[in-house]
Image (tube, rainbow, N blue to C red; front, top):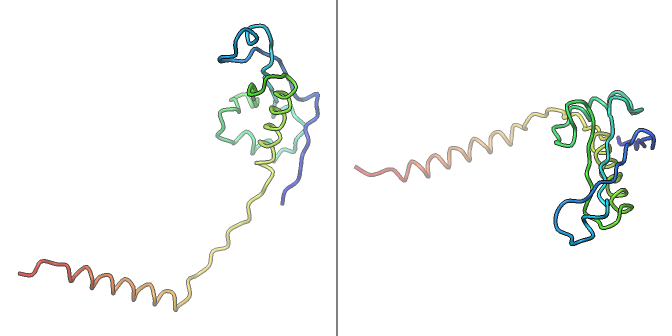
Length: 133
């Protein structure tokens, strides 16, 4: 079961910073990269989702429960803002899905018999490879 949760805009902090890496003269003047900060504990998400987000082994989630996403792949601030918000949505959507509980099944008697027959056959083949004295 998957339910879509939207985050309120006032819960997200977006800060424009200068992008890293090569880019010529423009990169030193324009703040086109975006730092997105989202405090999971203070958000309006359901408690179950908060626990799942905080339990993620993801480098974007800090010990304080803040998700930090840096978007700098595009040249414009608007595109980077959209990319950062999209990544946050994808991260939240990844914990929204609940896995089906696995029901343990037993192998059939015929499949057990086939497995043992194959084991015996392989054993004979390998025993035939022994050095003859």
